[in-house]
Image (tube, rainbow, N blue to C red; front, side, top):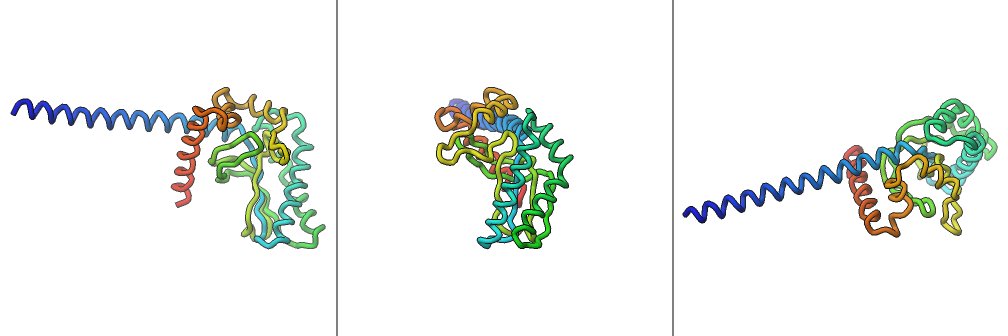
Length: 220
């Protein structure tokens, strides 16, 4: 009888220890994901352009607006080295962005309204050449064209990853240097070397999993 009680106690202890260990692993992973995600998000400023509709004409217009805004943004940010500086510039010139977008729209024969704002947006996992950014909530310059009911387009304004060489899929060294300056070694390796490093690939997928769950819960 005593032996049976001791056996049951051992099983009970094993279950408790297993659950505690699982909780420890979960909270450790969650803490890692939260820290990494926050640091990456705090180092990146994105562009989010939403077309009036999904018609071919409206989608083409969206790309024209995008190109003009990026050209202007690049002219403003030639000497900036941090996300904070970029956001300050964007805030100070937000009416310029709106006027540029409106001019592109009217020059192409449309009379859509334009709303330009700086805020937080949900972004899926996205690859820019050999740099991968996990899903998450990022600060962005959001441009809504007309009813803003069409497919959207997004990229990274800082560090400048919007004009990655599509043919080679390589991010310019200058952009990587800015990214490296704004991230620690672990985070930089995570977004630039995860596909070649099994350990980092696992960590990236872990971040991706937690962030996608977070976005789904936030949108429900």
